[in-house]
Structure formats: structure tokens, C-alpha cells
Amino acid sequence: MIRITVIAVGRLQEDYWKKAAAEYEKRLQAYCKLRVVEVPDERAPERASAAEREAILQKEGGLILRAADSSAPLWALAIDGERMSSERFSGAIGDFTVHGGSHIQFVIGGSLGLSPEVLSGAARRISFSDMTFPHQLMRVILLEQIYRGFRIARGEPYHK
Image 1 (tube, rainbow, N blue to C red):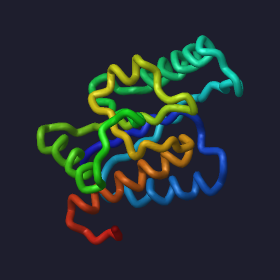
Image 2 (cartoon, rainbow, N blue to C red):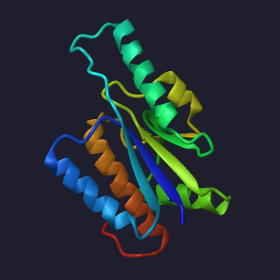
Image 3 (spheres, one colour):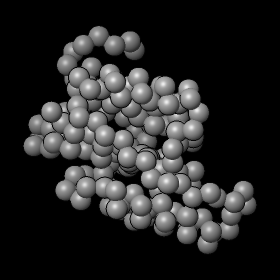
């Protein structure tokens, strides 16, 4: 069974995000070994300078890289990443396993995104939209798309 790790900057704060994520985590148990790793986020001042933003990204990036398993690829969620349909996303996970892969790590950055070190070390960059989403919502969207991807791969019904 494939292992999926989601490394996310920040904790889910609101109960509704926690419930939504927990529902998809429960559903995914039938398809993969899922692990969610939360690393602390850094509070960014409302009008952070470029140096402050860089320092925050570096700190969060270091935490992400320390939490990551160096033997498994990182698939970073990035606005400039590859856009794909749910079917293509499902196929990407399937292709990875067909070629011998057994562990994928998805990375969700904090409010400022991901550090250059995390992005440059990513095996793949994926964009779910040109829009920016709160990282708490993005975790729920990612878990739902992973679940949808497994359902598609198995030919199981799932609403479009």
C-alpha cells in the first residue's frame, strides 16, 4: 500500500477544518497509509519587509526539510506548479507507483508560500489554481483530491 505524507505548515485552527480533514483522512485509510505532519508556522507581520519574509520562509523551509523523509520525493503545492485535472492527478500518483514508488510527500507552505530550498528540492510542483487559498483550506482540498484520485484509479464512482 502506498504511503502518503502531507507536510503542512501550521495547525488546523477552526473546528470545521479539523472535521473536514478528519473525514478525508478516515476515507483514505482504505487506499493508502496516510500521515499528516504539521510544522509550526511563523507569524508574518502585516507589512513584513522582504528580509522578514525571507527569514520566515527560511525558517519554515528548514522545518519542512527536517520533517521530510529524504528517501521519498516531495511534491510541492505551488502556484507556479503544473496544473492538472483530477484524472491527470490520479494518473500521476498511479504512474509513480507503477514505476516502483511507494511513498509520496506532499508539501503545503504557510501564508508566504514555500522557501526556494523546498521548491528547488521538490520532484514535482503542483498547482490547484492560479488563486491563492488559505493553507488550512488547501490541506482539505489536497486530501479530497488524493481521495478522488484513488477512487478514479480504481474505477469507483465519485461525483464529478
